[in-house]
Image (cartoon, rainbow, N blue to C red; front, top):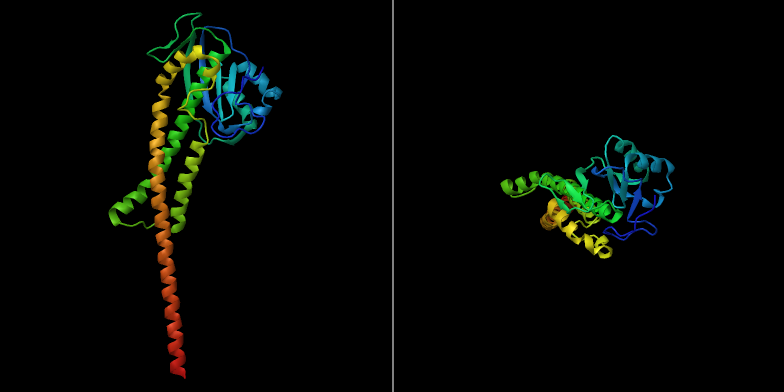
Length: 282
């Protein structure tokens, strides 16, 4: 079960010795396949996958699996009932397992030299079952799953900001405490860090440099899963979140400034009262 060439979308500096993706198992026989992509966590330690005997046995039973360093596993199989056991074994190599998994499935038809396309019903037709073609399909679905995860994170951040925005609109001020404001800032920054630190789904896979004949297939898959458009929408939303973060920081700073001014006034008043008391007692 060899490792594939390590070329699948680095988004951040890769730890030394970590392949970008590892292939486990073997493609099951048959022309019709299910491709099952799921986001397992922040990262998969791809260094030790091939040496994990239990994982290799489970992968051999499940089908051909590509495990991507950025936390996604994609399996080509004929039935999906063996994937849960495979994922349990993969979790031993996952950093920060996902509390909620994003999953995407598609059907693949091997046409044995026929035309490559994506049908109206979403079936992906491939001319053959060579590893580069399957890896390209796996990469596209892995990026689609990551985009779904990122879209969910951004949506959660926007939802959490609704009460504060409504408060500002109605009352002209935010009644949140400084701690609550800073927690919200932290949530925005954490979501942005997680999203920006994952696979760059809007960019073309490096695999195409070595296999330019797959360019047309990638164009069709990219259009089917709208990778570029979804990545652009996320970029725009993060621009809006950046502005929102600036507003939150200004609110926190204003609250601190008001508290400091009140403290200074109280200290001056106390000092005056002490001085008056001393003068009266004298």
